[in-house]
Length: 574
Picture (cartoon, rainbow, N blue to C red):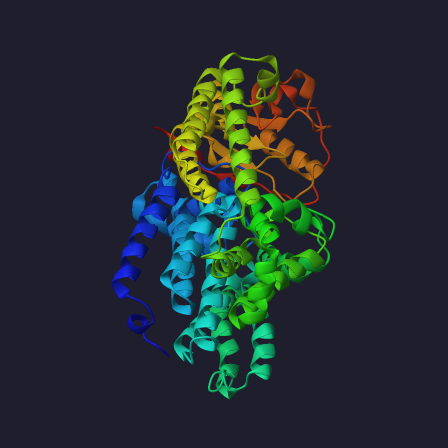
């Protein structure tokens, strides 16, 4: 294998890498600490991490004291670790994905530089930074950006070994990160799909793969299983030794229901087989999706000429196919395929003259979107009825929202006019960077109240007093996370009828206890019509019930379930 110095000028490599890391750090790290966790998933993962640190129980994740069996614990561990280091959840919860995003960009750049040249590696990383799905996931606290990173390490290791090797250290590293990906979010094994096109080309060009496909390769799965065992063995042994119904249910749920059953027989997010191809890729993977259309002949030529490009693109197609087969689909599922697609796209298109229609189309689209942003800002500033209605369930502070959108729109259009470069993707990158910086600072401060129930929970605490206890029915985890008073819930996994019966018993046990419920549910043990409205959070009106609204009697629950959390929201106090 040729050394780094022989393949390209190492000074150029490190200069370009430094600039890339500066750009990536600016876009991905700015805004950390400016906002609290937002739905849908962030408050859940953050509350689990907070409870890990508060209780010292890291092996079995809990939310509000109840076991959380939907995901393995690695991502929550990462937030909890940064929380222990920083002492500030607002800083800690966004750091893991931001760092994973930066690592992913580095791997794409480095692999492109090693396979082809520094220019291709640079363009691949910059192209990845343009794609909306990558930026959105790297700047939030969902699991998908982390599992994308581990899968990218897996792909990197396999390519380093098979296309630039032999390199057994990277080969086994790839398997290790596949194991880490599996205990992060089940699908960490996806780099294995790359073995299929590699085996095909190895059969065609045996001399090229000499010393890389040997019996030694069979040791890879052992490394993967060893990493998985670091979590799985202690978890299973603890379950078997204690053998409580809750722990057994946790083990069965996370090992079976949330893996094979979720893939084969999904119970939500049901979408047609073509969902990713027609509803996600065209806009979430823009501009790569349009580049494929604009330069399709070039793509075909390069796939035929370069086995490495073919292997990368076949793997991307297999990942999309894998998720398309399952009935349950979310747009983030195919995110792990994006880094290798950006790398292949750069290898195909670097040095190609831009097509006039592509440049004009994207430029026109940018002008149109900039005008839309400016128009929305003006309408918000004027408190136009359409904007007031659209945001009625979130905020009435349209003046500052208007200022933000007007500044963003004016800056957007001004940059389009100022930078008259013929490469429209450069203009798109500059506008994207400006937009994300504005949204990640000023925007976060404005959106924070809109995206959290903090105001509702603070108002409720003021009404009942901070020494009171509050129960929740039919709730999302963010209500626990943002509560300044102690919270009791009655199993997030139980039906509303069972939660209500447990809540009635809990309120009967002592005074100074209240219940907060959404007004859209029907209760038989409480008089909801006599309750007090606490306000709106996430488009639902919430009703406070006291002992005065309890019916004289209520049916016994099938199982007594009460989960208590002591003042979980204290960390939010300014």
